[in-house]
Image (cartoon, rainbow, N blue to C red):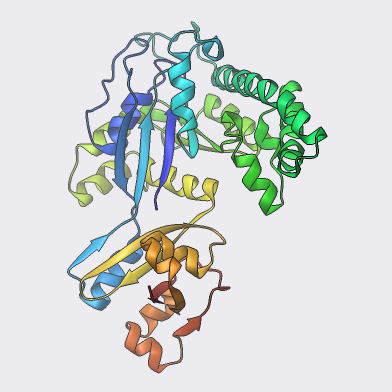
Amino acid sequence: MGFNCGIVGLPNVGKSTLFNALTSTVNAQAANYPFCTIEPNVGRVAVPDHRLAVLQKIDAAQKVVPTQLEFVDIAGLVKGASKGEGLGNQFLANIREVDAIIHVLRCFEDTDVVHVEGSVDPVRDAATVETELMLADLESLEKRIVPMRKKAQAGDKEAKAVLAVMEPALTALQEGKPARLARPDDVEAVRLFDQLCLLTAKPVLYVCNVDEASAATGNAYADQVAALAQAQGNKSVVISAAIEAEVAQLTDAAEQAEFLGALGLTETGLNRIIKAGYDLLGLETFFTSGPKESHAWTMKRGTKAPGAAGVIHSDFEKGFIRAEVIAFDDYVRFNGESGARENGKLRQEGKAYVMQDGDVVHFLFNV
């Protein structure tokens, strides 16, 4: 399992340029006019993880298989999208399909690139998009809550449970707040809350698209976004889409490192987005490794062993017996499974075991 992030924002903020750079493709037409992206473009990239190369060396694996990150480049939004303005209906439908929102904000001045609002103000732009999403959620809940209340009053237990998560979300939206602030803590309540499919319930990562000179240090605009993100409990990352586009053209890792170093950068914007995205969605990585391949798999933090087995194949979860688990550091310290086993570092774990980031695992199952 990877994770799916929708790249959104106002027209001409650099969404498609960023998408092209991140996926090293030219599938998204980057142009200086609104709606150059009409159909959502989807690109998958490998999630870099240095631990895979270590496992491959230890096990002399024939190949490595990283986990995947999916980006969806979504058409630019304008005011009135919640009422169908511009490509509003399509924009909102596309957002419903993603797990998280990467909100690109223009944080650079350039007289050659037209801003739809006539000036650069990333906090205002963030509010424009958030408002349209809140209005769409508000309309959606107001339509659904009346029949739900009737069912609850008639004694429907499921309706009562849904109403218990729907009403706080509606209240938050009516107060001009995103639905994510009304997210419950109880596991079953969270399940019902997620089934509401609210746009503003999705986690948000703000990406500050700055000019090349500000890529390493940020600028005043990016600082404003960082303050906004902190106040909302969200995250922000500073990148330069222009730089990422140049880095994407360099296939040699040494050349990439030299190019980034000259700009005062230690890693690509892609890496920073992945790290922030993992944290945003509460994701972790576990591994399977042997002579054939070293493979990275993505799971939600807190996933139990059978659920992790199901990431590989549903049959593994259905017929789960136990998991043989070695912590990554122990796997490296004792040079693989045999050494870890001999030193008592291979553990037999059952259905209640909560997987940890970096676990190297072998699942035993019977179907």
